[in-house]
Length: 266
Image (cartoon, rainbow, N blue to C red; front, side, top):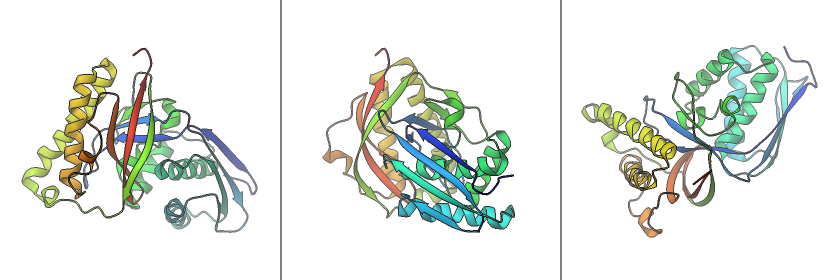
């Protein structure tokens, strides 16, 4: 149990679920990579009164943190508040949300173990947060790149990180009617899962030709199921194995990033 004025601080690189195509009520693998040369500092302190004080927290992240706080207030009987301070590189909102809420639970329980991660997954699910964000929860367990699946084993990747640059974001995502077609949903889910596993394997094997082909198919699936206007990717340069453009789900939006992979020994 936390004491008033007790606090914790995190200093980390920013992690991003670079390959994750969320489908409603389905769970598929997620490939998580650290963003090279990024940094963020998050501190959380317990307050005597209920409520949140958010300093340096992006507005979108703040809305989700408030929802998280209301959940633990009502469901866990928390009777105090938190002061949250964030500073650093605001590259990916989902990681800021994860860092803040992980620290809240760490203050409540004194640790982050399998039980706490299970609770965090439950809260995310109740709040409608998809696997792309939830997959970031256990980044400290691995301390590097990894592939994740809901209730599955974490598998560490080879030494790979990435540089990213935001090209554009859209908040108007309406899933294609294909996703709601029961006949197609199961094979589509399986295809997405196998494709992300194939991307993982090509990264492990440093097979950049296959990686390039897989990313092209992955982006096509994003366009097909998300309602994003087809042709956006075609306005940028062609995909190559280690330099490419791809969509990434964030909190309440989808962002198109330019990506450059950094692979040790390549």
